[in-house]
Image (cartoon, rainbow, N blue to C red; front, top):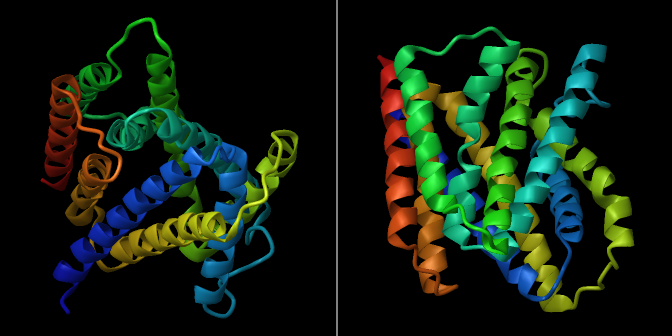
Length: 285
């Protein structure tokens, strides 16, 4: 199979894996599992899957350098905070809206790279960022109620995810992808262990355990397919397919959770996805 086909295919499978993970996470929230317990199992299971998929020498103790170890820790810290906010939002609001707000992370990367890495975006890039923020407001629909609060948590999850991905941009020159994913999984489990115990750990039955395992497997598959996609194709050629995550989540939301997006959410999604596609096309040119 040609790389021009494999790249988009891997990214599509990654988007499907992450959307499926979100649906399994929402299913677990029905049984009142804490976000920390879900994250703990996700990290452990994902770490095991990645460990056995890694080649000899790819998994090292921490990072390959002292700076790499520090960046791995910070990437994991911001990543687990973002994941916790995202999972909590999934349990409380429309699945498609939570996924949509979390997918704003690439644009936080642009802003953070501008601030900390001095990578100034183009004028068109700034224009797309403004349109995206307008789209996010349409999805959140500011008003005084708890759903707005949970939507804001989903929005914040993209900020922390964006910070984590900014660290990944440094790490990719110092470490291999499987080691980065492995240690993110392990660190995320360690970070949430004590909160999980304090939040009344709940012993899962067989069905619930299968759901927890499914979250971890889907998470690791999403990361692996993402890595493979960027390995065989240029970022500008495959990044656009990440937005299929939103499409898959919408399908799950409609047919499994009976959650039909309202017109404001649909319009916001069009603005966000459209601006994202235009931004990618501009960068590709």
